[in-house]
Length: 254
Image 1 (cartoon, one colour):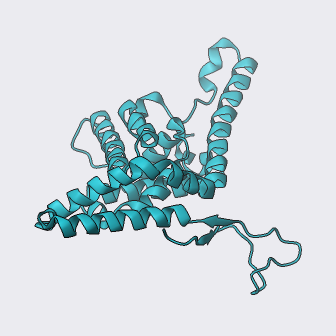
Image 2 (cartoon, helix red, strand yellow; image 1 turned 30 degrees about the vertical axis):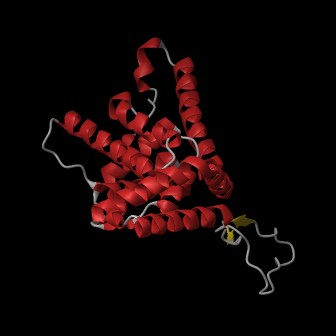
């Protein structure tokens, strides 16, 4: 098996050049990549062995891709939980922070509206600010696809969830717009962010980190798979970095 290696988190402090933290700073958190390296090694070895003993499996690029996908499915059927646990450990702080921000965003809006309605008479309820994500902007099919990520264990299946998620959003927008209207990149980003906030898919940073680690170029270069993953990554990065969802995403709603 592969030897253990470590990854130093992006938010870790700088050391003094001797591998030690400077005085007064927190020690670096090191994340092991041993399980991921083992998974890569097993997949590579089993695939190479199959192609060697069964040359016909490599007769065409399509056969080779199907063989590699089948091997991944078998390997992650056994190793997925262990590998994913390692990734979750690395992304835990980011995933926890995002989930907290999403819940606080919703609770803050509901609290403000409830206070406004308590202070208003019945004729002025309409003046109280609505939650900026309306039900008609949300696709139930897209939510189901995003939540299905946590139920799958292979890169191929997770990428299919990403494709289904983005396609469902596009269909929902097309139906709402009456058809024939292309969605802009900025508006697509906003819609994806809205669905992420509503779905609150568990460990979404870990899910995309898994795909970034194990999705093969053959999948990502197809078009739909690569575009779907990049769009989700961009939206998630935006939400992770945002300090104020109202100002960053919904400033035009008020």
